[in-house]
Image (cartoon, rainbow, N blue to C red):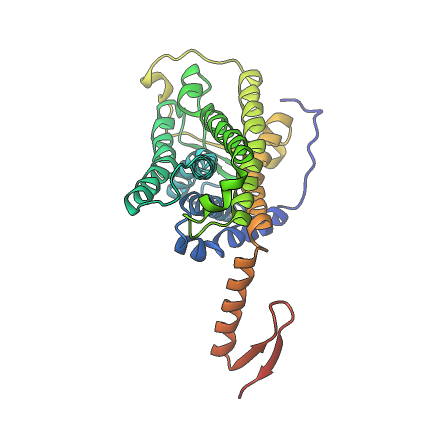
Length: 332
């Protein structure tokens, strides 16, 4: 441990608050995106929202303590963390794939079977790959889990070469594939600008404005995922020696152990502290980015207005004017 390293600290309630808002910002727009069958976008919202909720719960339970209050919850929570680390880049890949196929489509019309097939492929990428990752990580899971004060439950992966095959490098690989689709989409769009509106007409739930916002969302996620994944791999390689793989029994010999680390201990190691903070703030950042691109769009304001009108009618109020300049009056 590097005792002379210092990491900026802050009250844990700050993260708790942002994690909760991140959950709300990801989940509130979900219903109208589900209606539009935007599979990749919905997967991004669901995984990000649940990841924020997971971190929110952990930050509440383990504020100021490292007591193993809820071992079963930690088993579920850490498994979900492993999946979500792959799922968010995978959802971005789904978005970029869809944008690429729209930009390169030869036919204007899309049949129901083609649409259904596209949804199934997206679900395979956005759910199947993360679930597979949750299973494979168990191969190199050295012990049950760790508990870090203020952070909560955290998965542990034994640092062997196997870990890089089954766990560590997956977000980077998915991010690179997604980046290729993103670049090809931009290239194709530049070549076919004249046909672009006609191609979008085949997608009733997608206009040029939403197309570019989706592209910006996916590109932003890529620009974060690839550098962070590279940095994570570098940190794993340099922080401690890569151990030889000696087999299943050796790796899981002390599997029931739970590591418990008070804040004063894990803050001593700058690399560990930065890694922990980055991993939990990343999902909050994803929710903020999503809301920045979609939370103020025309369809979002329209749905906010509909929700306000619905609530107003239930409590006996009526609204008038446009969203943001409503005039409220009592009807009873």
